Image 1 (cartoon, rainbow, N blue to C red):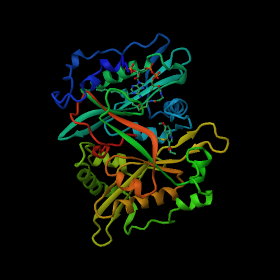
Image 2: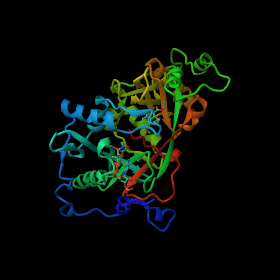
Image 3: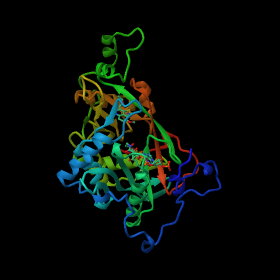
Length: 389
Ligand SMILES: CCCCCCCCCCCCCC(=O)CSCCNC(=O)CCNC(=O)[C@H](O)C(C)(C)COP(=O)(O)OP(=O)(O)OC[C@H]1O[C@@H](n2cnc3c(N)ncnc32)[C@H](O)[C@@H]1OP(=O)(O)O
Ligand SMILES: CCOC(=O)c1cnc2ccc(OC)cc2c1SCCC#N
């Protein structure tokens, strides 16, 4: 497949795959800041760049509405992600963020927001290297402006603005195959509300299965079973940071979280992220951790339902409580909070619980990418310790 834009970019090219003579690490050296293009890339004349201040209720609403109507849909157009405004503020206003990396495109005449792309700073470890990167996300062009080669301009513009902050690498995911994934993950789904998933057409009644038999199959206890299982609190940040850093050390690619990052990304935040830990009743040691984020989807073209309430597995660490027991408690909490489905990727050690806890494999894949950083040997999803939103 010809990739007229991606072939021009410092990313693993198809022709390079398997060439072990190429060194691991940055593909291109940094450019002297004086040589980075100072002015924005040209847009078609009817459009203009805008920087989106996510602190502004009005601008946040515009980004929310653009994504709600034009962001990612599954292949069967059954669902479209419906990230909430508080989720977007959480995902974009991270410690050390640059407002200039929250980039919009407006139609000059109407001032309507018609496209968006975002970057946030992150420290990502690749093997023994901790690299300052930009995490790129929420790339979205209005449905009416597709296939006009707007995306490459937006990607080049966010690249230019990231370069101006002396950052030369990036991490991103996509459902589409581009040059060249560092790994490809599979989504798995655990039904919590099987009747709704069957009614919307996502799941089907199993052979020789009645609806009541199916509901019973996915039934969960009313309360969690692990002694010492409780919501994470601010006072837990140092212990959770230690636990998580130690756990993530085993993966080839993982975030290099400090206490500041843990406080932002993992402290419970209503309708955005939930996190729990196990505090040993004997010695009050924090031995396990689990978390999920809230990402609803619009249900497209169904008379009875408009929204799917979905929870997504985030970071989980088990050192004393068996992973299956810990994650079963997470499913119990998600069901208590009225989620319809609990989703997880086959990254880290998730495979352990996916089969055991009645998850089913999805037909969607998620490809992970690094920009301007080559990883020699192909990574398995179990070697990946990074969850992007
Ligand atoms: C050092 C810092 C570096 C920072 C930058 C790092 C890189 C960050 C990269 C971005 C990471 C984003 C991560 C992220 O947000 C998570 S993935 C979600 C992306 N968004 C959506 O799928 C929303 C619905 N779709 C759309 O809005 C449009 O279809 C988009 C805007 C996706 C493409 O608009 P379009 O109107 O359909 O297409 P044209 O404008 O005509 O452009 C066609 C070209 O765009 C390439 N394309 C298509 N989808 C892509 C995708 N998801 N990533 C990268 N490239 C993508 C495509 O291969 C082709 O290039 P090629 O000819 O070479 O094949
Ligand atoms: C019921 C299981 O599927 C989903 O939860 C879901 C929801 N909304 C989406 C919106 C866009 C979309 O585009 C790929 C997929 C979904 C999916 S399946 C992949 C995400 C997971 N797990």
